[in-house]
Image (cartoon, rainbow, N blue to C red; front, side):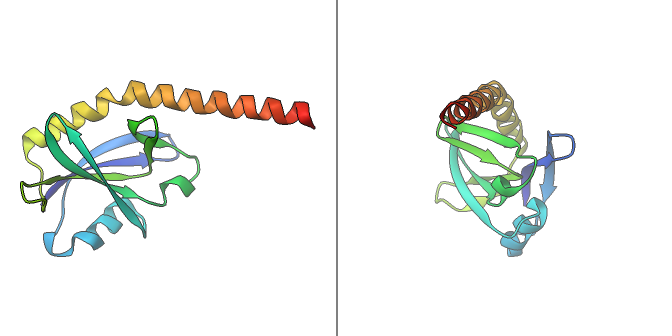
Length: 137
């Protein structure tokens, strides 16, 4: 089965997309191996009318430096390595086709500005909180 991964390089703070083939018979182990984690979560997204699942490294929030990976909404930002798979009409996980990969890469690229803006808001909030704490001390 073909999937798309977004892998974080923590040293360079970069996100790198990769097209990977995994064994359908052992998907869970494959996700753990590719994402480099021991705990995953699944987030459903809709991209241009197509349903996908994002397999998330549930430990991504505990890695340093903290690198946000994908902006879903103001209340939902994903961290750590990710894998993208497609859902068929019956809700079963299936591999990606070329069109899916292109669609997902466009979606990810389109979220870059939102992710950057969200990150800057978090930095500003952290600085404001620190200033308030200093005034109270």
